[in-house]
Amino acid sequence: MGEITNMMEYQAIAKQKLPKMAYDYYASGAEDEWTLKENREAFSRILFRPRILIDVSTIDMTTSVLGLKISMPIMIAPTAFQKMAHPEGEYATARAAAAAGTAMTLSSWATSSVEEVASTGPGIRFFQLYVYKDRKVVEQLVRRAEKAGFKAIALTVDTPRLGRREADIKNRFVLPPNLTLKNFEGLDLGKMDQAADSGLASYVAGQIDRTLSWKDVKWLQTITTMPILVKGVITAEDARLAVHSGAAGIIVSNHGARQLDYVPATISALEEVVTAAQGRIPVFLDGGVRRGTDVFKALALGAAGVFIGRPVVFALAAEGEAGVRNILRMIREEFELTMALGGCTKLSDITRRHIFTEDDRLGRPLPRL
Image 1 (cartoon, rainbow, N blue to C red):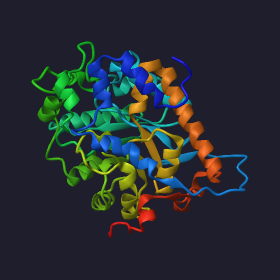
Image 2: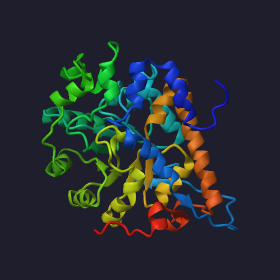
Image 3: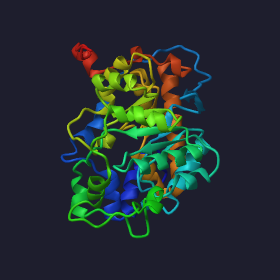
Image 4: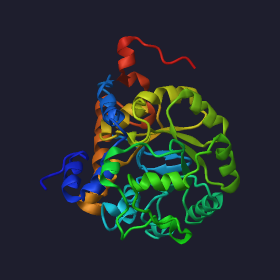
């Protein structure tokens, strides 16, 4: 395999090791995949304004999220069907996150249940929620997550219907026969049938509630004491509504560019959302984060932390738990180095003055709020 020096290198290994259907499911985006490319490329258009001659002999990357202390502002995003990448799937990811002292988000569509993931030992875990048409199913799932010690709900709000992922349509994507949606196994919702296009798209069309609206964010607060992060906000208007609806935080996300193509990269949408949230609730980001420099850029634009998704499944496919531990170690070391070279010894030292965006260069003001 040769020495792995950054998390991107795991993708090529995963491509070699995984069946085409599995790799394409993880790697692809919606339609033309413009946003998929842009999620990465937008980071490359943000440049640094490093400060020099600052004592950087000690660097503190610790932070807290929803009152929970973590070792670094880098967490694990929810990705579905992890046992499709490696037999240990979500178990391995949970152990790697706990070992790194950071939070993991478990997907509703995990191939391991909330109870199974909790059984791996202590750790900070959030539960990503899709709202099903049958609200009893939702209530049951939320209560199980709470009972299993999960600390927050990440409510996905950008998926009333599944985005058009052409690789999955071509592959007639369906979950391998040995795997189920473990959280739904006892509810007769754990299996995904073969379909004329994407089995997942058909499953979503049949089960996920298209009527989901802001009033449901309030409803969720009546069935759980867990704080709710609204995942999938990319505009100022929705950021304000999220604050108003009682959300505990926002995740700026375009679903890994898998839903609506031609939305901006999340790093490009971040500042607008942060400005609209006015510091009332924390704003996080996922999408395209591959380097410690990306983490620094997100924090400079006001993010309280970031989540990484695809690199987790690619590292899992390549090396199991050791791979996930390794990507968390590498991005941590890169971020620490970026802080040192940028002249920052703690997260609160990272400011908007440390970066220079395309808008700054063009003298464009932020969208008026």
